[in-house]
Image (tube, rainbow, N blue to C red):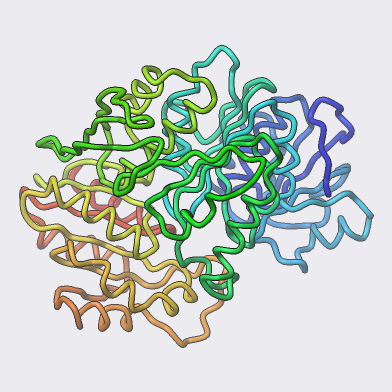
Length: 462
């Protein structure tokens, strides 16, 4: 097991392979602000890399073995293959190497309190809600997000060694490398099937994560999720529950939606009314996210008032139901949803405030996910009046020609004949310009670069 003492300064120079990733860039910032000499490489330029360079981190575009010169620790991300030139050179030179998740797990142990938010959906939103609650604590927490939050000016906030808040992703069973003092599991769903064999494999991974928690840790569970519910009974761990449909320690009752679509509810704790929670973000799914965030904060001795105030002040994280602007009287949103469950939840949330037609521009993310979850995807656009599908965003995968966006369009049209495939972003923008009317709403969806369509459309308005 990799061990890392952040104050020991055992390593003189730490190099990140794939530093442009949202988590990798945040880890690099933490080490940089902790006094380490940090360098990193990535395949392409990005705003994140520009920020890292401006903060004094040595950034290389492209992977070359010379990039690791002087490094005595190399951290690499899951997206890096074993034949990467820098990784092979590090192995050849017998430099210490560690994957991102193992390093994060080791880093978390440097903090007295560590909070980790896991689950198939909602990690970034929930972690950002907790961030909003705790970011101004006198203990100066360290926060690592999977998205950009305006209130911390990015995806990371570097504090002292008292509290660390982070996301815990299940991909490649990475959650098994984390041992937080407070673990939140939001939900368990079928995803990352390029790694997991089946649903049982996914459930067992989360079970292993819960089993690994140290005695005295707190496990916060969504009692409404049938798979998460199975994790309740365990020894030496304080189990806390939250939910809407079932009785739980933290419960939302009397749920209402304001005229603008924002939800509010009465918060109950162990059967007693605490007060009214008013959200400033859309979606019934964010009610459960807010319950998880309140539970996480309260179980770490933060008052209900401060937790509720933090939830109300949370205005959302970039790329999560983010309002981008207006085009000819039509609202333009962007969302990270790339799984059928997430698409359903986000479209349902947006539809509440939609005056006329809802246009969804969806970019499928990875061939494996699109192929395996095709039937679920075909039923997830029911709230949209018109659905436009772009080409599949390959991410880390190769195209073997066995799935195409047109296949998804055909499947959607078996349920609702309002989907079409448009190949280029420019042609999609032209379609929207020709068809959008005042009162319409358009949302770009996906984990790739589909957000550029909204930006291109809004540029046309200027």
